[in-house]
Image 1 (cartoon, rainbow, N blue to C red):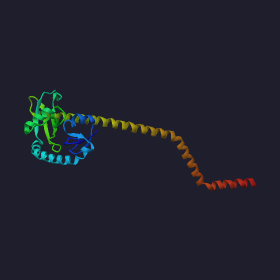
Image 2 (cartoon, rainbow, N blue to C red):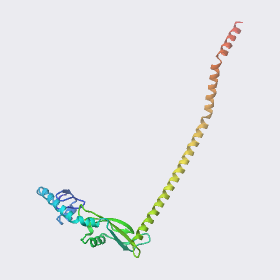
Image 3 (cartoon, helix red, strand yellow):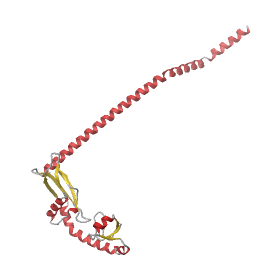
Image 4 (cartoon, rainbow, N blue to C red):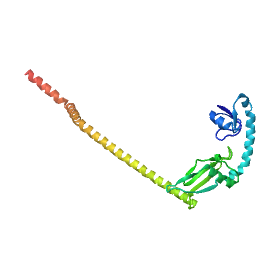
Amino acid sequence: MKILLLEDVYKLGRAGEVKKVAPGYARNYLMPQGLAVLATPGAIKQAGRIRKEGEKKRARINEEMSGVAEQLDGQLFTFAVKASETGRLYGSVNTQMLAEAVGEEIGVEIEAKQIESQPLREIGLHNVSVRLTVDLIPEVEVIVHREGEPPESALEEEEQEALKAQEALEEISGEVEGEAEEEEGETEETEAEGEEIDSEEAGPDQEDMEAKEEEAELDQENPEDEEVEEVESEEEVAE
């Protein structure tokens, strides 16, 4: 169904725009929240005014939040958690936990839906986006580390895991190359055997052809002998 946006909606559109969405999304979320109305002819006539009002509101909010975005961009947050030997968390660092940590840092209430991230379930460094407005989306760094260990340990562990993965990849690549070379060698050997067989089969025919060529050459070299033999034969008949 078609709706007219009354407010900016992240990943959907800006105020004053007409969008086509699923009926359930419109009726259960956009309309009850006052974010959109049905795109009737009467509503569409108001689109220009709604767009201008949205632009003014957006500019004001962006100006208010620009300082917060600068403060937040590149900020580091750490979470101490329980994890298995493989680095898998017993649980997760979810968006609500991230929103609370960010809100405490900047002194502005942040909702979980403003955190652009899946729940973090692995030890290591993660990049997480925080949507302050549709235009201001700073990115923060989050280190998830084991309880009782410093945050740096998570980075070291992540580097070790990356190194192991690289070594495993190189080993697999080497095996694949070795198999390819072996197959190539077998193919060349098979082709050589085929050429040898072809040569043997063609051998007698080739010898016959060479013999015939030699006889033809001899006949061309001694045409006078043939003429002499013919003359002598004629004389004998005359006698």
